[in-house]
Length: 82
Image 1 (cartoon, helix red, strand yellow):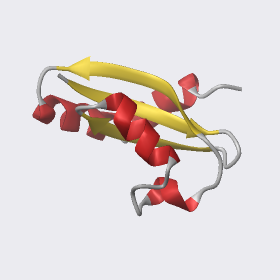
Image 2 (image 1 turned 60 degrees about the horizontal axis):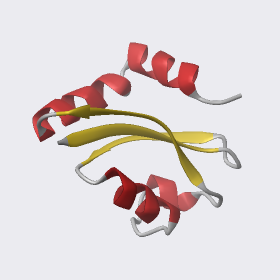
Image 3 (image 1 turned 90 degrees about the vertical axis):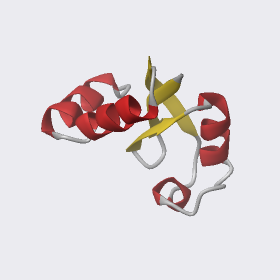
Image 4 (image 1 turned 120 degrees about the vertical axis):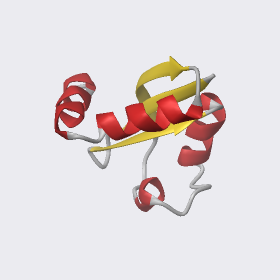
C-alpha cells in the first residue's frame, strides 16, 4: 500500500504533495527536517491535510503528478484550511 499526501505549514502558508509507503514516518521526517528539500526550508510544523491510498508505487507517482497539475492544484487549494 502506498499513500499520496498533502501536508501544510500554517506558519509559512506553504503546502507539499508527496507519496510514500509509510505515511506516519514520512510526516515525522518532514517535521524533523530529515530531508534536505523543500519542506526543510520553512520553520513550523507540517500537518497532514489530505491523503489517499493506492495499491502500487506507480499509481502513487501518477496520482502525485496529477495533484501537481492545474486541476490538482485547484483541488489541493480547496482542502487547505482557512
